[in-house]
Image 1 (tube, rainbow over the protein chains, first blue to last red):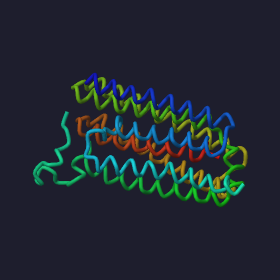
Image 2: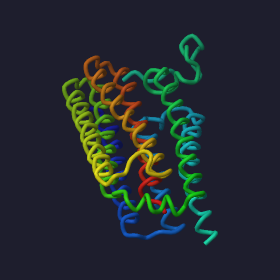
Image 3: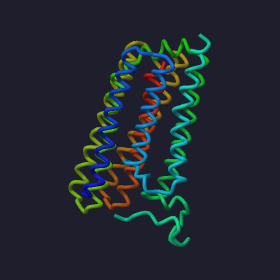
Length: 91
Length: 194
């Protein structure tokens, strides 16, 4: 096994586990609102980025591919935050 | 390891154009791109409908178990980690270790299915189904469609465990990581954000 690559993959996994526990704690504590939503979705973006770069191995591919997938990830995390904000802003 | 052809390689070395730059078989990336667009549209539909029916969605979400969803997230990301380690092991010529890691990834995929089935059974016992309301229609559509991809992913991992070239492992695990990635977005969207 290539030790450096395996260590990178394992480091990503540890971060993914920590961010999942953080999201679960934030969501399960009953903490709601724009800030809570923002933190939970930011954690989802960070997790998705690590998956793309270290699990799917997009770190070494041309920047255009990285940008395409990160744009998708950005859209699917920002749009839910914005649409969840609408009813909250309406009160 | 057999790296993807460099972007500046001759056209005859890059028969799939830009897709040749991605790890694994380019046809798998055509499928992955199709899937992320499809799931992206489903997420958009869920998010917009939630904004329109905010009270209904809040009531529906309150009936979900975020801990079960969180456990399933940990199960899938650990499975993805094992799948990624399988590629590293196979690249280093360690076929046995690669198959062991793939076996672990598939086993955790089955755990995900069992937990999801238990969740569906609990909903059925509570009298909740696809036609209960808009929230649960979308909940079952999104999670059910994803569950089908988990099943397909396990079949693909089993196939590449049998035919275990480095290229095949990269191809099969790329699909599995896509399934993992989609769940990482779906979990907060459906279970957590209010």
